[in-house]
Image (tube, rainbow, N blue to C red; front, side, top):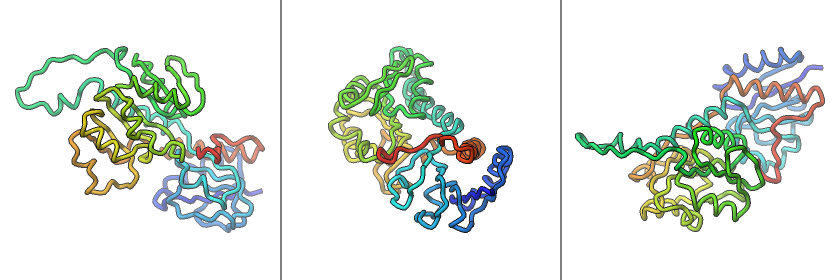
Length: 310
């Protein structure tokens, strides 16, 4: 029986993904039809991105699973027309890219690189940074991306604390959970990295109350979701010196509007949502493996708990 796979993502990605998916499905020994326009009632799987235009899944009466190309699923998890399993993207290319970005910016703060780059001509200030073992970093969110970043920083001897909603155990990382765990994770954090999903429970995780828990002058790095931070509260904390600097890669509105105060704030670094993105070569492998598993009657990988939103 032919397996029909609908590709619903930006059209310009189709020429990139088509040969990768075709090769992967062929290697899996499947008879398949793959395209951007298929008869809805005959579609078995959807390779999905929110910007692909598909919103109503009800005509896809034979649908077995939706396989997202994105790690975040907040734009689809509450779709009432989606009644089949939803898998989010977890692949080693995306994970490695995020780990490299997070480690790079933690080291930038740790080593004081901004001060060196912005030093006035002739300025000579030979102040060495502490060793990593004397620097505390807290990772909020210990999913696949957060755990990978925490492990990498711990391998560099940073004092790493990780916080998650549920209990985790990662060698070399102090793992905390729950409301009291969040307070502890923030109270000792010289550098905070946000890698939580965007859900009703995580919105404004950093707010006036939690920002006040940080050691004065703490640094914030957010490659997770813009909704994790109360923007007004962060701007106040920056102006008052409670937060020393923030590096922000994600925002509530993207692209970040030109008039937004983050652009001109002297203690904010804006990066254009580049911390990591799905790599087609590795993402196609994950998609094809999930289709192979579905056709073999095996459990899908990386399924979303839609009650939690991730």
